[in-house]
Amino acid sequence: MANDNYARGLVPVNQGHRSANIYRVSTAADIYVGQPVAMPAAGFVIGAGVATDSSVVLGVVVGFLGTNKSGLATSDPYLDVSDLTPPTPASDTGDRFVMVLDDPNQEYYIQEDTGGTALALADLGASIHMLYRGADGSAVTGNADTGRVTAELDASTVAATTAGMFTILRLFDGVNNDGTNNVAGDYAKWVVRITHHQKTGLQAVAQV
Image (cartoon, rainbow, N blue to C red):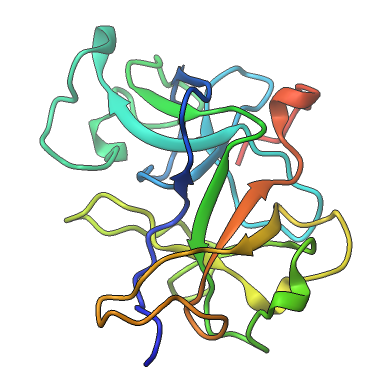
C-alpha cells in the first residue's frame, strides 16, 4: 500500500536529553511546529528559508511562549505573526519566544515529496533541501488546525555533496495508518540530521 501523505515538517527522533532552548522571535511570516529556524546577526530567531546552497540552521521549533515567557495571547497552535507587537522584523520588540531543539546531533524524520525521482536506500548519506507545500515551494505554509508546518524533503535536490540543509541517515522505521510499513518511494519518511548546524560554528545568516 502507499505511504501516508502527511506533511508535518521535522519530527524529533530519540530526543532523550538533547538540548532545547528558548529564543526570541523576529519574523514577518508565521512559525509552525516542526519548522527549521535560524538566527541572523540581530539575535532574533527567524524561519529558515528554502535554500539552494549550504544553509545554516539553528534547530527545529517544538513550542511557543508569549510575553514574559508565559502562554501566547491566542489559542492558535502556531505562532501567528499578527500576534506580534509590532509584527515586523525591523521594529519587533521580541515579545514572543520559540522553544527550539538546537542540539547539532538531534535526528528528525520528515516526509519526502513526489517531485522528481523518489529517494532510495542508495541515497543514504546524501544531502537534500526541503520545500513547503504551496504555489512555489518557498513561501512558508502550515496547518492552522494542527499547528504543524507543511514542509517536505525536496527529492529533486538530493546530491552526493554536503550542500543540502539536511543529511539523509536512514529510512524511518514506522507504520502507515493501514498497517503497512513505511517504505522507500513517494511520501516516504526519512531520518535526517541538520547538515550545517549553526551552533557548531555560530555562523551568521542573512535576515529574510
